[in-house]
Length: 99
Image (cartoon, rainbow, N blue to C red):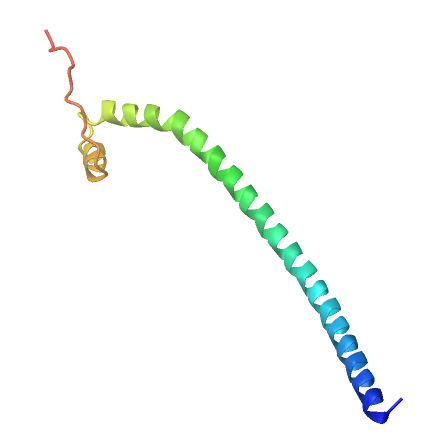
């Protein structure tokens, strides 16, 4: 074997070794990043479940609360001001006249 062939073989072997070590390092790093992504996905899922629960509460309670606030607004000017401030038009009171 000529010395030039020997140096080429050693160079190729060193390159393979360096690429193998790099591949192992990148694999370990990728595994760590996958764990981080899974943790963030679990956190996002938990937050979405909380948002969905709150949305269900708002849909169940919100209309009743708004209706009650509207019913109180003719007798309570600050309540009427709050409703108007947030874009809700209080209904006109249709209370029967006092006899």
